[in-house]
Length: 528
Figure 1 (tube, rainbow, N blue to C red):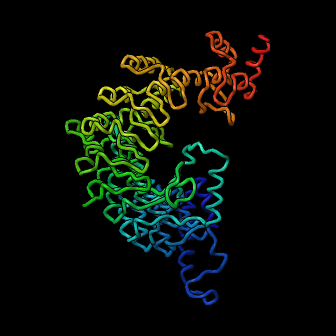
Figure 2: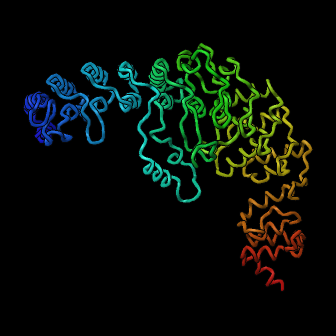
Figure 3: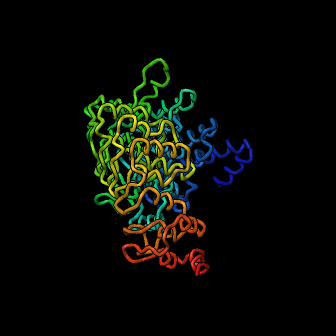
């Protein structure tokens, strides 16, 4: 009956409003009376259906209109159960969808605040409602109930099945039951812009929500599992342990209330060995810290990087991969990709000025920050991305980074550059390195000159076990044997010997046969 009348109301029958209020008020009132048949305070089974949650009916999707809020109030005053739930477990506070007055009224009538209501207020970006909900005493470090182990295992298997994971937003999304309210609020922090007042208003709301949660005891270092290409410690495959504050800084969500926490442990490390400064450098250390500073153009702004250094952060800290602040500023993140220079330029310049030796430190992969900056150029240009200015490599070279250092494979800067050379900027830098004295004919540990990686990216070979480019003694024709026949013929025309054997006594002809490159094999058939 309730549903049919509700449908009449939806169709515009104003008289049905009064009818429904009257009927349901009587219904709810009678529902509270003791029943000798079903026990004190109970109702007949047919009255325990989802339709019986009358207050929810009025709040669901309609609660923003004044007369509907009034209807819900009348029903509650008549005895409707403010803690009744529907089939999905949603209660009246959830249906109120963050409405301040209704949430306040429900709590005053005994509604028990559950974690879903907290998340509802945060998602609705309603700081006033969040404050009211928190007054109910719920722990702000509570999370949603996880699914059963069987369901969770199935969901994860489905999510990461199909071979290599490309770490799209779908794969990198944190599971609902792992999210803390503080993390949820912090992730809403917008990228501030003086010419966009809307972002400042949103920032003010997020600022207030984060402050409220911290004031009520939210733990900035609470641990949760997040998807990751690299698994650390005891975390399950495709996951790593993270902390709320480190993760927010990694995603560029620097919010001032965190840095006002008394005795904040700025040296605290997460599973990757990141301090707060390292996390900030991975996410964009030049991000403005406070929305209030952005509102006043005359006030000097403070970046996350500057704030952490002023608090005593260690500029020379290394993570578990041996990376310093420069590695993390310049390098590519496995999920979020490359950062724009606008997010790192100032901090990069300050770092090389304060600690110039950081420019020549190698990480555990054997790369210096300069190596990463070259890889940054080549990868961005190869994917037709625009090169951000100034180019990080130019900043480091101007600061006298050692450009003669090779990586763990013996590759020089020009070996790395030669794998690209798609853009004018790359070619100019290659010429600059040669003019500075780098040997264009220098060999890496595989016995390759820079011409090899250049040819390799031109021919796009297909790797076959035992016929890769890692064995010494191979010439350019060996490398070209898997590519285009015309390019192979051009190299032969330069005088290269097609009968030259590598250390494994393989000739370019053998390589072409192994690749199944019929076009190259036809060259030899014609010559025969």
